Image 1 (cartoon, one colour):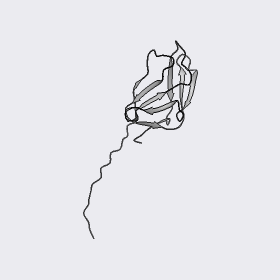
Image 2: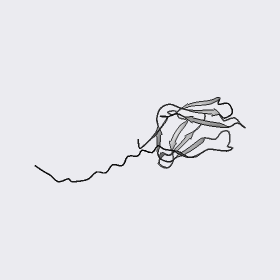
Image 3: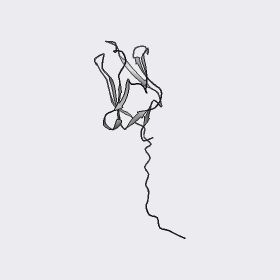
Length: 108
């Protein structure tokens, strides 16, 4: 009892995590959204994005990745947009902390 194979299935596994390719830098309007573009499609996981002041690390705002202030879109869902609920303070520098699991690789 034998049969011929009817098809060969090739599977490619994406083992490379998305990396940030561009982000909001330099002087921006205090009411601007913060935007980052990634190398491949991303999706919302669980947890928070934290906006901190560069000088002393003071937390400016903590936003749930699942909230309305954080969106993913753009070409192939590679753009993360963060809309702080309050305007950033003039003449201050900020950075964003995104813990593991807050964003996920769509490819797994």
